Image 1: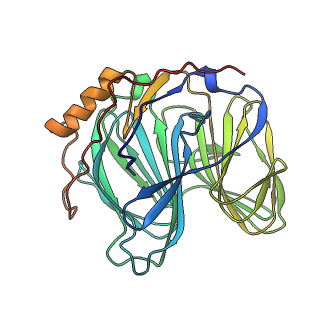
Image 2: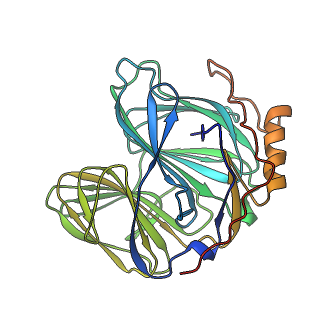
Length: 321
């Protein structure tokens, strides 16, 4: 998925300065962003004061939207570098095309994982004949310096490992949870898991104390460590936890995101993650003027033009808590 903000600003993220080294309960409110004609997303990361959770640098939640008489998601070809995109659906389908020639329909509870590495472009759209509702999340995972020039590739995994407990079904999207390991390729220690809770369920999930965590509410009403979390909001939990108490007030769907704090300081602008303003500037120029990001074939429309890049990248200093 693309960042379609035409006034995109550079954001410095990563580094230990923003990491909270102890358990906290920091409720993050989303920012509404239009995505095409009929889809509005709720952007949770980057957020004011909270840039990343582990290697997760971007989190959008969208739907459930009734698109029975609408085109649904229509994101034209656009570039990425220095990151992985994670497509995750609760309802609907998304057709993925990329400059490698990949053509894949991603359905609910299937993992669509695109590793941009040095350069890739892709499009995402609701198929012409599509389900009535569209509901999902899009995540970006920053690649560490040692792997950010990796050869681009796309993975689709329809069968993912599941952890169960009374009233709980946890699908492991990336990383490992309670001994279950996702087949998705990762480059830093992290976790993404989809949690389905039945009404009235009270449970505790095992966590890694060295990870920082956040919980995104997809649907229903849940108390996360005693804090009510409603759909479209995310609770940042900090580090130092060995377990996470959950209580479902209704049938509910959550995403648990976590990972070791990302050590490197990054520059994120539009659809690029780099290490300097000059690197971002070169990528923008390459998308406009060269074939570096390849061509997405089969999409019925023009590719997405790059917004104007501010003359100087933002360089805020991280805060320590």
